[in-house]
Length: 474
Image 1 (cartoon, rainbow, N blue to C red):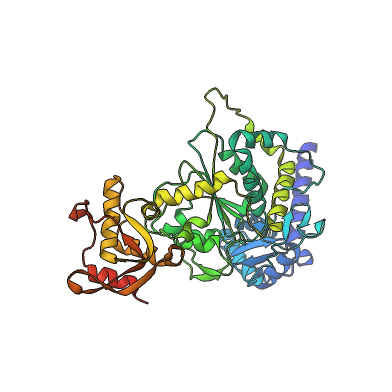
Image 2: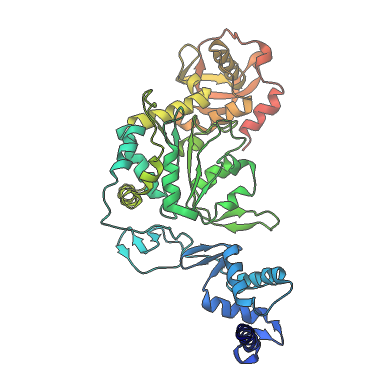
């Protein structure tokens, strides 16, 4: 009987508490006649959880806040007052909250890095004061952190000594919301060298400020660029060696100095700011199917790894060891960032890195190899060459060297026109061709080999007049 009385007393107490909690005495001000006033709820919620919303994403002083986390907090607030349709009510309240704290832009300061324990200014140093930002890093700044000896050993095993400063500068460059260097980084190896560990370390330091995905997807998926808004880095740790169908989006992101048109699935396009840097890790360089311009290749820093020693035994715990040195790696990156800023955002480049870029341009654009060849053409201020003959001798060069010609005459002459000044040639519409016809061509270059060995069917000059006319249209 005593036990039953105790149980009854407990139940009675629970009922009293429940009635008290549901009474008007302690009801929140957003309860209005047993319904939730969504506008008042949003105002009160934001007092307790200060946030700002940019393009549908929520941020607090610590950085990005997921919708799931906000929904969980909403549920905690309303669970005692809503018993049916809870999911729908939470969705509606989330929408009202986002509308209530909507902002047009966030402050973007390219001088500051936002750590989880304060703000680091490149020009003024560290302060414990926190500012609103899209890019709060999940790690702390520690000026007294130890030198990252295992990290430095790893880099010396991975890269040539003269290429390490380039990586150091680029990793530091990824800490700030800035694209002044107008460059992406590619690290190329044969596989198995351990270059993916760089991505592991960056993920630990940057957290949600870094996306892992495909650089190629920027060109092939119209929604992908919007995913990079508010991010510091897009890292492609398995970069495709297939040729890119276009390069316009990549070039725009790498050099972005203002807003660009972005589109999210199911939403109207809008103008957004992207400052995400691009890093590609792979077994081959980034290639373009049609873009032979210097603009695409000059935006690439290309580092090549050392070969993996045949007798090397991989350390299965290397990632954890490197992450354990993250505070020291951060300081190492900041040294690189300071050097980059002092050099006017010009990266330190080894002779090998310079050769890498030249070789990639040569491999992906055999027009360059043709123009530097012997026995086919010569640059001569008094020389001339018709467009048709110049393209024919180019295809002859390709045939002799068992390489594939550039896809079309249009691509060939687009390159010639875009680089006319550096090549010291001049496009003209007034050259004498066969049978005294006035045709298009170039001054400052001449053909020195007239035997056209390439089979006619390999020379893509169908509709000559239409193709060549398009080349010189102003």
